[in-house]
Amino acid sequence: MQQSATGVFRVRFAPSISADPGGLAGPAASDEPAEFARELKAAGAMVVHGAYPDPVTIGASRDAADRIGNLSFVEVVDPLVEPD
Image (cartoon, rainbow, N blue to C red; front, side, top):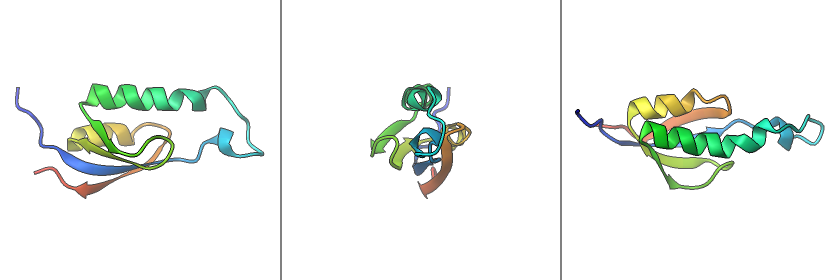
């Protein structure tokens, strides 16, 4: 099995509905940190700096970054250092 090259990406999270004072607070938002951690592990990525819900920097392959970017509560994943 060939290992994918690792790059560095910035992950920014979408504003949570439960964080809005006029919004509907629901249980889904509390599951986001755990889901983010599970998906990072499953994708073979890791947090380099930061913590949810603030923007985080991750080390990941392009495929892993794309997978993280598909999470419903992730706003954007920007490359900082592209994988070789």
